[in-house]
Length: 174
Image (cartoon, rainbow, N blue to C red; front, top):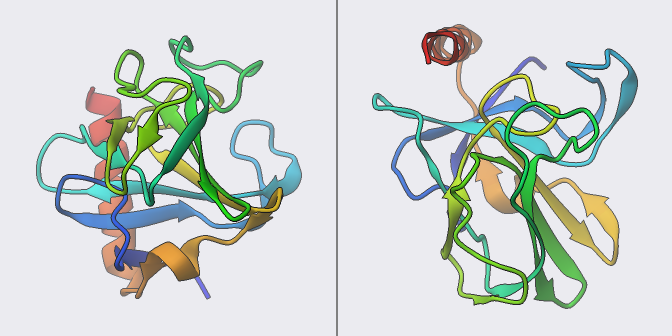
């Protein structure tokens, strides 16, 4: 099937305009750091724009912040999620956002948020190989694949490879 590029549906996850590129899918994969075959309970994605990669992550729905970790400064195998936020949306749904840039998280534990509330900037904290958002969705404590709810569409593999190569070059330059 190959890699796919997804476009946002009704729910927005980045404030800035651009295309969302999925860099790792939901399901079993080879972990990029540990090289172990293990379950990946979310999707990794980044925002593709012509500008700087500073991308504001938004809450996909209204809810209450039930977890907020803000003190991870860089790569950390002991805290693989890095700076992260979990939002309880009610009816058993929880969304999780991992790897925020240090010092950019704008919410705190217990905050009541509306849909589209800014959370912070996409980053590369925790056990991350590059700047991206790990987005996870759970229902009654079980991970569910968020692509059908959040992202749709695909595009040609050559264009995706070019976009990913350009993104990696930007990361190396920074």
